[in-house]
Length: 174
Image (cartoon, rainbow, N blue to C red):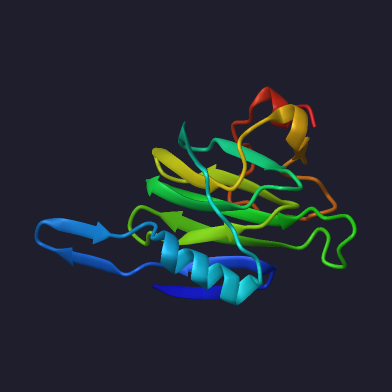
């Protein structure tokens, strides 16, 4: 497994080893020991993942920008192809509003580690996609106080590969 720093500091990109032959593909998507050691070495933080979630969406659905101040997430694409944007939403950071985009697919199996105070958004590029994330906190909207930004908020100036995405009511009303 290769672990790379990104332009966003504690946001890391994981490139797992993939074994392919005539039967298909095999990849280890998580190994607590390896990931814990890599995250500690590269960010200085100890992160324990306690829950896994997935969302399934058709082409052109755009979710986010969502996040909170406590949760670490390890995200990947189990099926299909997604354009993921990670945004520094920490208003006290000198890098507030900085973002980076990644294309995650069921072929490249790349993963992105997202720290607290960073927003995550993704756009489905394939006919259908399954977005997966491990998280370090239990979902509790009363405690976590999630933040949401509009996908085309001018303060971020994010370049999206689509003009009219399909949005939830939550994402339309921000």
